[in-house]
Length: 89
Image 1: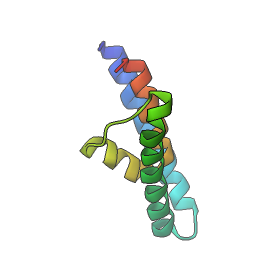
Image 2: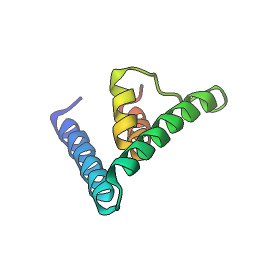
Image 3: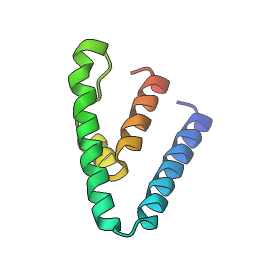
Image 4: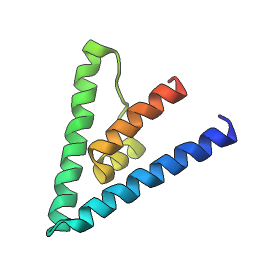
């Protein structure tokens, strides 16, 4: 992977993380919002893997994908899917 693509990927990831943290801090209950966002991300990852039998698109479950989905929620799952398309895995 070229250096510019790595910089673009890291910048996009940092931007998504900042947007999620800013959205969590605007709510009245940030801990509850963080936990519900993490649960939604894990459920979205499970849904992508279940539907992968029909669509051919799935994400492997490892420490990195689990952490990304638990912390970032649904935007984390979407960013992992976009990265998978960009990297052609």
